[in-house]
Image (tube, rainbow, N blue to C red; front, side, top):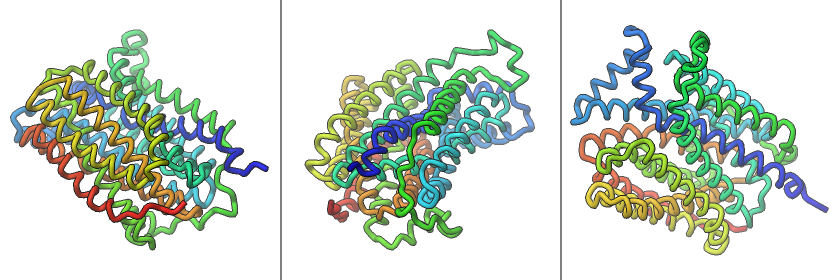
Length: 443
């Protein structure tokens, strides 16, 4: 007789993959458009509105650097990413715990519908205020990553948990690849040139990218409604979340299992250190190698391909052999060395060849670390709290992505990219040391 997990696995994993993939597109689609968005709103927003006040603050910070125009664009892009990630930080444990109580399917349907609404607002965000609202809503609904990851835990056994988390990592990698590619390739596809009347509905030069995201959300919503079978059985559901536990940091501190708390701290520190790379790579390569957005698209595509191969081949083959803990430590150590090497390759050697070598090891390390830590968290957590514990873990990752851009940007424009990358690599020694104390879970 087949188990519920086995009967739902084929359909559910495909839907989960698409959900994660679209969430990451929503997060990364405007990565290459930061400078263009800034110029657009400078030209079209009133001088006494929200954007003008925000822009003045960014300029006052940027003028302390040697390249104020580039610094302003970097701060603007970092702010947009931080807003999105901060909302994910707040709502990830809420959605995760709600799904522990109500089931994964209804929470996924609600949040995917909300994500579609955020893309619709993004299409019509000729006003910066509407644009900001769309990013806030997208971040709130993007907290459903925890629900999707918990569903993977529902339909995988403890023995093949790492393989399931490899699917999660592949969705992340493909989303980070596709999002910037969509943004970059549609940057010059201005719908207003063909249909100028769309301006009355708030359309702007970058609406085409948002329309693609909206279409993907609609497909995802229809697929979940038609094909996703509930993965959490009624007898395995928990009590949900209390008002006090809606604070992710408080929820972390009140977790009774010390091992889960330590693993969450390790995950937070890993994402915080790696986010330095995500924040400044575009500006570092532009400064030292003369890279344009087109060159940077090649970098992101290469990273995505290596990451997909890592998640789909290396992780699936080696993590079951060496265990989740060793995989995590191996990945963190490899990332640390690769980030320091990137600082040398770009800032000192100024060699694209050595940069791509370092990027390869960085991507492989990231794949092992992310899958290893995700698997450890889900294996440490009891079945009735998968959503809650996974939500806290993902939430802390979002908090790291919300906080690190500010420090990374300040360091880059004050001490340079080489020192910043070496610092990021050295910083990862901290989670590496903490991770040594984590136990290998019993299966």
